[in-house]
Image (tube, rainbow, N blue to C red; front, side):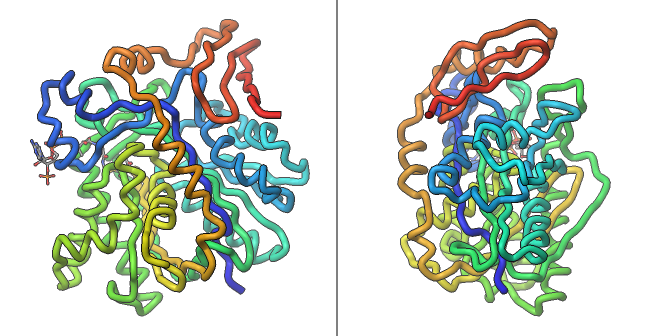
Length: 390
Ligand code: CAA
């Protein structure tokens, strides 16, 4: 029995900053961002958007299509937890009016936790083939103003329905995974911006890739040329390209730029426009690949590399199913990305400095353009969400 991704829906904020604007404010050559790190825009969440509203908005098309009726497991992956006790997924469960017969849990391991969620969900479906799981990855990447990481900020969420006989991607059983206790990127509870040892983090990302690949290759017996496409975790698109080059070189098959683009480029298109989405990043890449590839990818094998600082990494693979195009939300994703509102530098800095109040007071937040749901305020220490749809 095949198990894997049956539906895939992506959401990001309606606001963005063009990295040319940021480059001007930081007196940096814009080519450093556009070419050097391979990013063009960064998605900026409005003050009434958070990981819950991004996640619920990503899953909303599935609700509209009646796809959530058989879901009995909701796994919410994020590194932007909003509460030390309550799972953010429970708010999403409520907004999406899901059945009470559901296990709901939040998962954390930096940008890797969505992949843990996917693998746990596959285990659940293997035991309950007539049931489905909803895995949502949702994050807001935030670094200090003026820091090297600033230009890689972004936000987004991906909702994935996991089932038997999936209509999009069957996940193969072989997997290489790797854990190491390193401090390349972390965010202590008292900080709202991540701390990062940037250059070191890129080296750990690559080392963990080589280790994960080694185990995957031993287990599966596959070589790089058994893959038609690759989807990497994408903190910035250049990172994915560099990682693939390193892997190919390590295996003694150096790769030309053109050949690499054919393997990776479609998966990088959305991320170039949204910025890093942490736990959602690789899945934004997968959505981008499925949505934008002109070639019919049915029957093609894709290699997936998930990396979460700290660190945990996993290399695994999936096979794209025939007829997959009928079940994508390509049009919605295109509309979302094309109709975003550009922020000036000052608007960006004002939103950045706004922050969710932490003084325990009563707040009603101004209404910005969001998806179908918004974070409307705080009352009696409780976050309040509003549905903008009937
Ligand atoms: N035109 C073209 N290219 C230019 C340029 C110009 N005018 N100026 C600079 N460049 C190039 C540089 O040559 C460099 O390319 P190479 O790496 O190929 O040499 C590239 O632009 C970046 O320049 P710098 O190395 O000088 O950039 P930086 O040090 O200011 O920042 C960074 C890079 C440290 C990775 C920073 O973006 C950062 O800290 N990012 C956050 C951490 C991160 O994303 N790490 C990734 C691995 S960890 C992970 O994946 C988990 C996660 O999601 C965070």
